[in-house]
Length: 189
Ligand code: PRP
Ligand code: MN
Ligand code: MG
Image (tube, rainbow, N blue to C red):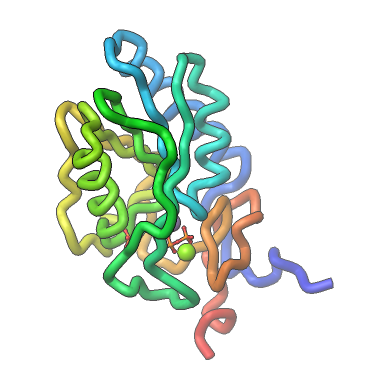
């Protein structure tokens, strides 16, 4: 059978390193939220954030709702199309709530910026971002949080094409439990 591991140039974060950092982020978020008067709505960005969302909310021992929004911008390319669109909206009401947007990675910042505005327009009282990876080298738009919203990030990511822990190339590799650099021959034809 074809091996996913063999397609990696190298591993950046192992499953254990990811788990340890997720636990720290969950504590940080929980600490910040425990005093909050308004309800907390966690919103994961599909598809990429599905594993991080699950791991994170399991470790937030506070009452939160969990919902999912789907945004697409990359298609089957390694480059962003530059115009992300919401292809499936959340179903819960976030009016008057603290929204925490959960992402696998913030790259150009366009996806998360679109979602911050979207949650703001739905009447959220604050909008925070919790992203497992942040790739500031690729930022094209300034990420403006809303209200007292905070920006939580797991790790700063070097500017490589990475996959795993939810992140894909052409919809594959999402199920890898670690994050690795994809061999160039796998995406450059
Ligand atoms: C990826 C990633 C983020 C977004 C970041 O999603 O999961 O959501 O791109 O890029 P940006 O900061 O340049 O907007 P993608 O659009 O590939 O969809 P997916 O989550 O289904 O893979
Ligand atoms: Mn995504
Ligand atoms: Mg993608």
